[in-house]
Image (cartoon, rainbow, N blue to C red; front, side):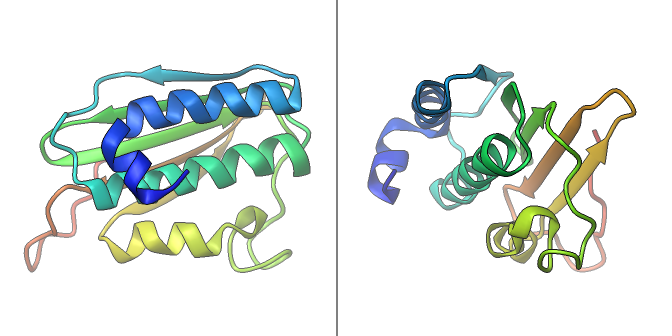
Length: 149
């Protein structure tokens, strides 16, 4: 999806369309949950998070053979969070297939360059969750706090 379309539709609507399209193309459940997204979310951040979701869904369904994927958005006035969970195989350790798990270094680097953070959590129950968090405003000097899930 192009930048202008994401800006026009808003991230929740764009992700709803993305997940529906991916579910149809890979013939498995790819669902979307909007857990509260501010209407005033910066468009630049929305585009970055869209790209993270798109790449992570594709990696889960094509490389890691997930049978289901869930995408969730949550936002406040101070931060925006994207979560992508799946039941696919565990990603390769960092350094094994690129600078980031599943080779997502390019889009994950965009999250970090905006003062955000990315975490990858594997549960013992065959679940993998990637979370990307970006502050809506750049952190002031000396403020290194990052909210955790």
